Length: 612
Image (cartoon, rainbow, N blue to C red; front, side, top):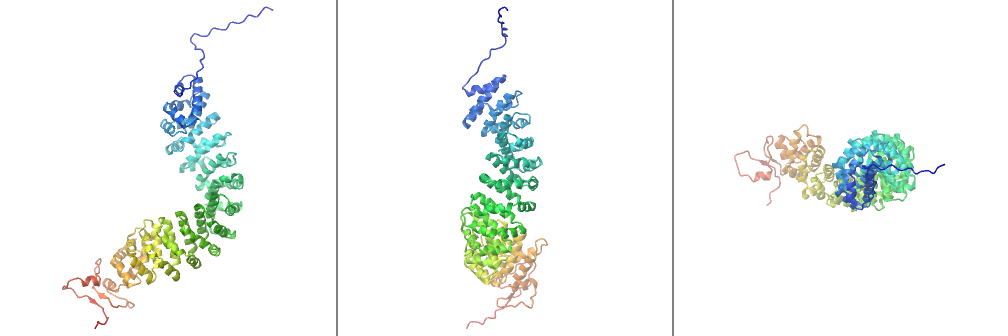
C-alpha cells in the first residue's frame, strides 16, 4: 500500500470572519452586545447580565441606567431557545428592582411574559417568567393586566410543575393576584383549589406558606369554601395541623379553618372529622401566641350556632377561655373576650363564666392600654349581662361600674357603645343604678350623645333612658347639661336614634322640672313636627309628646284646650289661652316680663299663704 497523502483543507470563504472570543468587564459594553444580530453573542451577554444583576440592587439600577431593560424585554421573545432562556434569567432577576418594574409596565412586557408560560416552553423560562410576574404582581395595575391577559390560568397549571422554583413563583404571583376579588373567584372557576391544597404537602415551607396565604384569602368567598369542602380540604388542613413539624405555619392554617367555619356545612363537617377536638387542643396546650389567638378566633366562628355553643359548653370551653384571659398578649385577650361574648349567648355558659370568676377577669381588662382589648372586654360584659341580673351584680361586685363609666370617654366608638350597653343592663337594678350614677354617669354620657357614630348614639340613648328612670338620675342629667344633646337627637335622620331619643325624653318627662326644661329647649315643637309626619312618627314619639304635656299641664291645656280627670293642677299652673298651631306657648316667667296690654288676663294658681 502506498503512503497516505494528507488531504488539503478547503480555503475559508473570503467573506467569513474568523471566530473572535469576546470578553468584557464593562457593563456598558455588555449592554451594547444585547443589540447584536449574532445569537452566540446574545447568549453570552444575557448570561453576563444575569450574573451581574444577581449581585445586588445597585447593579440592577446600573443596568437600568445603561438601557438593558428594553432589549431584554424583546429578547424574551427571540426565536432562539437559548437566547430566550438567558434573557428571561436576566430580566427575572432585574424585575426585583422597583424602577425596572415601572419600566416593564411602561414597555407593556406582561403579555410577552405570559405567552412564555405555555407547557412546551423550557422549565428555566417558566422559572424566571414567573419570577418576573411575582415581582410585577405587587403593583395594582400589573395585577389587572395579568388578569386581563388571562395569566391566571397558566399560573394555576404551573402549580403542578415538577420544579419547586416554578411552583414557588407561581403561587406567590397568585397570592398577590387574589388580593382583588375578581381573581379570587377566578381561582375557583379555573379549578385552582386542588393544586393549592396539594402544595400543603410540599417539602419546602415557603411554598406551603404561600399556598396557605392564598387559601386564607380565597376562602373568604362562599362558593370557594364549598369547593374547599368538596376537595377534602378539611382533611388536608387537619392533616397539616396535626403535624408538629409545621407548627410555625399553623397560624395561617387556622385562619383558613376560621374562614371555612362561617358555613353551617363546614361546621358539621369539622365536628364529624374531629377537627373541633383539635381546635380545643390548640387552646388548652401552651404554644405560640398567634396559634392560640387564631384557634380562639376559630372557636368564635364555631360559637355562632346555638347547637355548637351547646356542644362547646359540654366540652367545658368556658374554663379554657377564662384561663386564657390571664395570659399576656393583646391579640389573644381580644380574641378570647370575643369568644366569651359569642359563648354568652348560651344561658348555661353565662352561669359558667360567673361561677369560674370569669366576669372579674373580664372587668380587669377594661383598664387595658390596648383599645381593642377594652372594646372586646366591654363587648363580652354586654353579652354576659344581657337579661342576667346575677351577672350584672357580679360586674358591680368586681367594681366594674366605675370602669364602664370611665370607658364612656374612650376614643374608640365600639368601646363606648359596648360600655353603654353594659350600663343599660346593670341599671335595671336600683342598687346598681345608684352606684353607676354616683360615678358621674350622666355627665360621662354627654360626649357619646354627640357622637358621629350611629351605634354609639343608639347605645348612649338607651343608657340614658335606663339611668333616668328616677328623680336622682334626671336631676344629674339636668345639672350635667345632658338635656341639650338629647333634644337635638330628635332631629336625627336615623330611625333608631330618633326613636331611642323619643323614648329617653318620655322617661325624662316624668317630672315637671325636666319636662319644662326640655320644652324650653324645643322638644315639644320637634315632637309635634315628628308626629305630623307619617314616615317619622312612631309610638315612642307619641308617648314622649303625651308625657311632656302630662308633666306640663299649662302647656297641655293651651294646646289641647282640655285636661283629663287624672290631671291635677297645682301651684304654678296658668292658663295662657288657646294656642294656635305652630305658636310657641310662653312660660309664666316670660309672660310676667311683658308689659300690661289689652289682651285677656292670664290666670295663674298660687295657693300658698302670704307671708305676714
